[in-house]
Length: 328
Image (cartoon, rainbow, N blue to C red; front, side, top):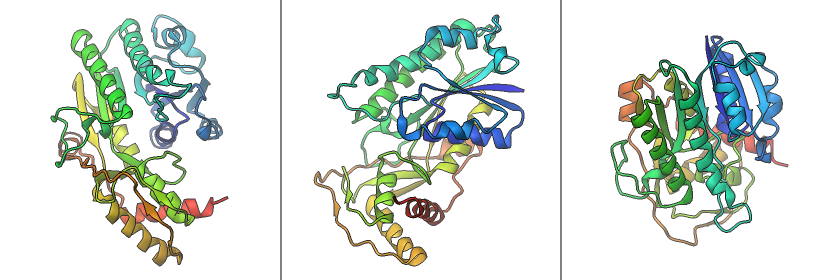
């Protein structure tokens, strides 16, 4: 029996992973934690509370006393929720709504504080690091922009705040692993989409606007090459992190390498053929920036036997259907 702590559990991926593990792996007990600061996913609280093997707590994962209480194997706090010890920590608690000049700019440092708090407290509290692991969900944004398929061996060159913060957290965790033996697996996820996703990334923005026939405003050129993945495939990939054996390792998790223009064209065809709707709004990208951020998936397939399985057309159709049915 493994006990799994999921931080940022109300977020899109955190919630879906919690439910996936609860439904498919009865040998896992889940402690789902979230500070409920991101109100757009607050309804996921009711979803998690419906599962007997998911224990939900409204807590701040940066609260050192809370972390010490649930990770320290000599104390009985955790037995209030589940028997046994925390074996796996999924670190999802990352604020993607980053604005350097807003009044909430402290969120930038909070992203670093979360990672440092989890790692340092795990080292202090876990008596035996065998069969323990931190699984950190990073982003393919750490690579930056280059005309090639990025592999895990490529140098990091982030060009946005999100990528820079994830790269910093990766380096912190790698240092903790090298110096203290902390077992860490990092997954660099590409842009994900699916029913219910409310992120303002490229595929989600495109599909949500197509479904309700509203203008599409992009921060990059439609000539850009990106990698996109359906959320189901990403969740299955994240579960494989429990099985990794190295003290420290990094894996890309992505789906299809595709141009933004081709993704729009395929989506418009599906909108017309499957739903009988036509898109006739403007597609605008005022900054003609061409981004090259495709990634290689060879390592995760060779090491973990994982690959994305959902056909692109199917994933687009399911997502568009959600946005059409939920258009208010």
